[in-house]
Image (cartoon, rainbow, N blue to C red):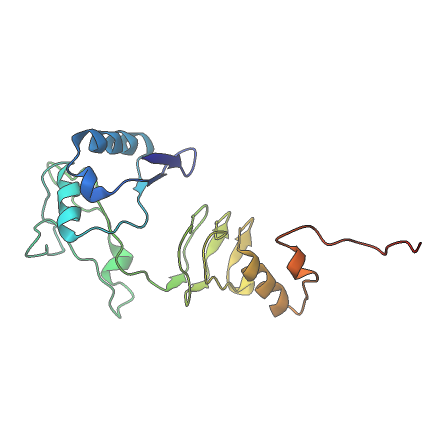
Length: 205
């Protein structure tokens, strides 16, 4: 299992671990819990888990509670469905770890994304990392993309006039597309991935 901090203050990416198996391995779960206490938020990408795995892993942190607003899955109590609707204030936009008013509030939440929203509107995505994310068809509008890392994302299309870009990392294909959209050409494109293109003329012998 590999733990890679995302920022100096909060967040880490955890790889080379399956959450379903970690739920059945006390030693491995102890390592994950220790990482959570240290980094506060953990990200596990590409997890091919079932709802039973999700429930079992979450239960390792303690008994699951019923969300005060969302209903639980009837087959897997404690799992709440956060879904998209046509309303601007649908659940995926307003969800938060509720219940702080309770005598014993929850310590956190284990969230699993099963369907990605294609529209990113008016969001502060500073320092966000989209590594391995397929953004084909996604729209970014009114977003703050300071130091946002899209370098290892695929299918990214950005409109600089509709977003705030600063030190934003994008794939080569996106950079070329942006340049072409502004009427520019990128010469010697075939040399970008290899040796740099030579400049000037060669001397005649």
